[in-house]
Image (cartoon, rainbow, N blue to C red):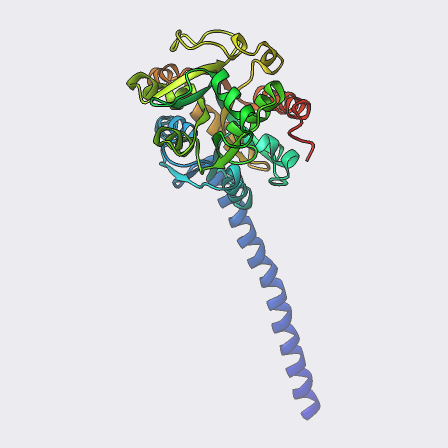
Length: 343
């Protein structure tokens, strides 16, 4: 009798275990299928929540001033808010690293300028724009040399003569190694032989303010960042790093008028774009590209670009990637020739 009971108990236990074994995979399959369906649905319905727009530089700077109105127009296309966050530091690499460390899901956009194209070359970061996909390349622009309205320097040659007479005393406000003023500073040193005391700030707006307040003698300023201060008389543009006269500032001479050897570095200037981490779903990238393309073509944004003297590009996909790759190669060649990369 005991043997019969034992046999029945064992059979009952085996049945229970077998039943559990059958239902567990079924449950797992159901859950897995549900998750896959949810993921697919989320991609198809993207975006389902607010998007973070991470700007590499401080509020009020050139990059920030271009991204905010563009984001406001793009979010109308996307149906969700794009929340702008300024994340400064290390020539924009803090913001770049932040977006790279986040999930490749389209909810963290890197809103940046040209700087990451040089990070690896300059030893700033292992990241470059090859680690991201450009969903929208806005445009590029011309830069110039500025001083305060009360500056004793009335020409670019005045600055060079003073710097050569007392090396390291003339103060150039920069945004750090790899930033726009640093890059142009390297070109200036190569062409003229002058060296400067470079003082780093967290954005081009701060670098400009340092010149306006008298903390520094000069800086390199984008037309879009300085045009209103120029119009109000708060700053003076001494020259433009361009091959053609800037229509918005016809009275400002070209740098080549004083130093013809600058021709080898021109045309050259910063660019601006919106990026996602590489590996983002192509459908999400397409949705973002379409939204930003529509925003970039809006007449109100065309006015922004015109007012800031930005050369409109509007590139996406392979066209954007090709532009950035060419810019990177040309700039590295220029910095190498100037001696800035010998260290």
